[in-house]
Image (tube, rainbow, N blue to C red):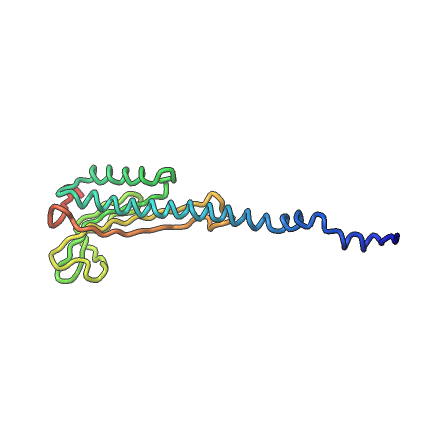
Length: 178
């Protein structure tokens, strides 16, 4: 029986190959797992923020007359929709815009976390959205998503959404004290 040398025995030994392969692949698979989980969390935050924009516009569009207290309550409901995400960086604004002579201008505006639009400010709306004499509710929301796993995603990602909705029961929603 011939004795093989140490080197030839080690090169021919295939025990532990699976462990080495696992050690090489495991960090990549773990990073993919956490990256996918983090992507899903960011996507959920973005979708909830979009729901806030739609809900704010919808609730205001159902009213005939609103006041700043009503709008503040609607903004608080928007914060509830964002749960379990933090609302510290949720910024909301709702405005009534009317088009006259082909120019859309702000009639009233109220914001929470972002300033109100000045009355009379010209707003660029998507083409064909409203005609002269018509009004629309413009809801704008931004959210700064802070990833808890900052090494996989940028530390802060800003999401924003704009939602347009026509008033439901009147030609234009009036704000009594905006």
